[in-house]
Amino acid sequence: MSIAERIRYLVKRHPKSRQDIAGDLFISADCLGNYITGRRCPDAAMVRKMAIYFQVSADYILCVTPALQDTFTLPTVEQEQSLLSLFRTMTPVQRELFLHSGYGITSYASIQQVLPVMEIPCETV
Image (cartoon, rainbow, N blue to C red; front, side, top):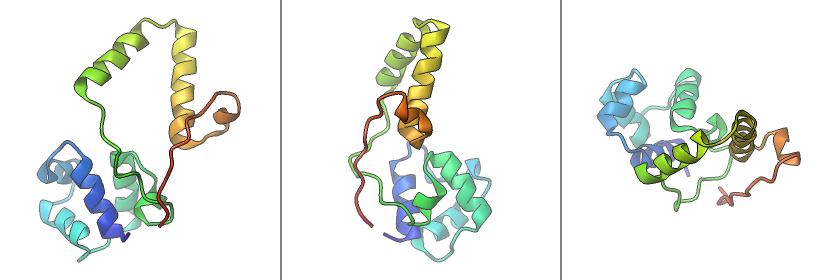
C-alpha cells in the first residue's frame, strides 16, 4: 500500500467531506486530491498534521507500519453517547483508570503492563 493509498483510505473512512478535511488541514481541496492520487507527497509537517487529524501514527501514513483493518468503522452517535453516559457515572478515580486504559489500547504505552490491553490485528504491508 502506498502513501497515497493510505491517505485515500483515511479520507474515505472519515465522516467529513474532502472539502471539510482539506479546510481542517489548512490546505486546498486540490492539494488533498493530489495527495490522494499520488501526484504530490506530503512533507513531514503535513504528515504530522494528518496523523494527528486522522488519529493514526505518522509511521502508518508513511507505510512503515502495517495497514489498518478494512473492517474498522467509526463509532455511531448512539455508541458515543452511551460511552459518554457511562463515563459521567464514574468516580474521578474510575475515569482516570478508564482514560489510561484507553490510552494503552491506542498507543501500546507501558500502561499495558498494568492494565489488560485489547490486541488489534493488523495486515502486513
